[in-house]
Amino acid sequence: MLFLYNLILLLASQVVKLLALFSPKMKLFVDGRKEVFSILKSKINTTDKTIWFHAASLGEYEQGLPVIEKIKIQYPNHKIVVTFFSPSGYEVRKNNTVADATVYLPLDTKSNAQKFIKAINPELVFFIKYEYWPNYLNELKKLEIKTYLISGIFREKQAFFKWYGGFYRNALKTFDYFFVQNESSKNLIQSIGFNNVKISGDTRFDRVVSILERDNSLDFIEQFKNNKTTIVIGSSWPKDENLLVNYINNASDEIKFIIAPHNIKAEQISNLKSQITKTSVLFSEKSTIDLSNFNVFIIDTIGILTKIYSYADIAYVGGGFGNPGVHNILEPATFGVPIIIGPNYSHFAEATALVHQEGCISISNQNELNDAFNLLINNEDERNEKGHICSTFVQMNKGATDVILNRIT
Image 1 (cartoon, helix red, strand yellow):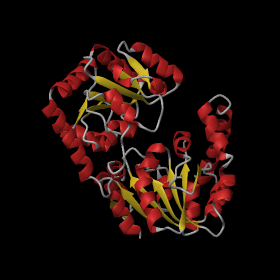
Image 2 (image 1 turned 90 degrees about the horizontal axis):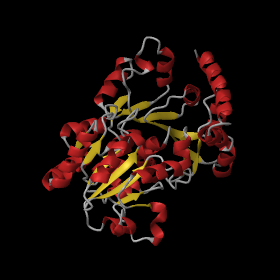
Image 3 (image 1 turned 135 degrees about the horizontal axis):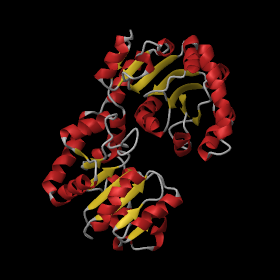
Image 4 (image 1 turned 180 degrees about the horizontal axis):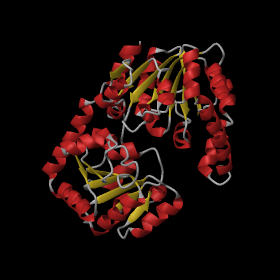
């Protein structure tokens, strides 16, 4: 089976190179991996002690960040290596300050695995949430390097739990310990013979709780808000915006809207702005304009949405009309903001829990969206109650990082 896996991987690597000729994202995927070993050579010496964290993309990096930060404190003489599989993670966080070296993970060939692990020579390795690369894992096991899964999630549909999943189950045997988010994940992995598992919870809660300790002020958002009720729309997609624009265009001028779309390509931003009949302004235009005169503020940049949520009276988090579903609701929740989302949230435990607890409202159509916004705008007690549910939920679920650190140190 490993031979077949390696053959498929070889073929896939050639297909990706072909796709890179036509896709900017695939070009980043291919070209970025050409620089991996030169970057490592310039930042990691053969005598260095290192700890390696692997994240599939941006969400997994943010999830692992509390652990990375505490490991960095507990192991001050070690260098931290962070790898990404996806360009959407690497390109946003390649210049992070927590890691000593941040690179793409080379494709999972046996030779790449041997070369990469030799280059960084890690003492500890952490895979965040998922991604199980057999050649890397086999090499780590062979070298007896401690390897952990943190904030892991397992579901019945995964190949590990099917009759044909022997190859994938073998990959799990390489882990020294599994730290999983919930009881169902623990029960699933125990059902196939793994008892080196502990429910730690989700480290994302620790991440968003730590946000409260930093300075989240943004002068230009204060100017735009101008003490009016403000709805922050985060990570919206066109399917979200089709409903949202209709509501915005018919809303009172006493309500302010901040929109931070998931995709900030100029064409999509221009199309969104053209649909809005209220006075609107882009982040890229803000330097010469009195923002308090506008009803809608479109954020055509990245990296500031979390701080913007601190100014929200109500949040709409996008993605819930697509697949796999809604984006991160924990960032507005930590600020005690009531949240509205689309219908596709069942894959996300935190969204499912907050909908059940009524801190979050799920909507499926225009009428439901209108009713949810109107309820939260017109009923301050309802708004405060749902916001309190959200902030309490986050506080009650923090602590996963300490569970992990207490077990491995």
